Image 1 (cartoon, rainbow, N blue to C red):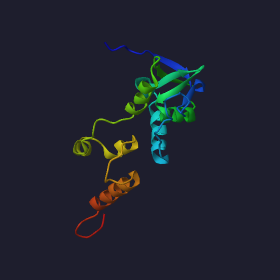
Image 2: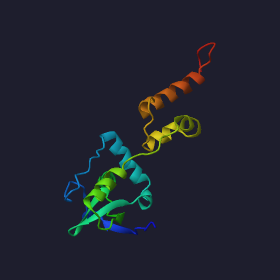
Image 3: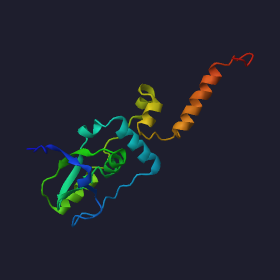
Length: 162
């Protein structure tokens, strides 16, 4: 039987990044580059209600909590001035189990159907929302290409004037 873990609002002042403070659990192996972090920050600022749907996974440590799932979100929340974050406080478990949660929480098991994304979704929105689309380049490249396409459409093919 699956036991549900209730959500709790925990002050950001009581939440700490996983820096290896739990015995037997190495520090968080994930990192985020500047551009991706900026997108995460913007995503949280644009849609903070998403935090209630995707809580941080935390583990009690002394009188505080260590984040095992959501370290980058915690950084972005603190930078955004968010004072409380919805969390799931994991029950007491072995270091082996905690280590597996650290990794499994960040594994992307699925894949994206890029044909469907290209045909059914707005590519600029997808990139703005943080999705990485291989072979398309940066958002600036795509917007420039769209501007060039608009310019070409507004130019008369015969005389070259708009």
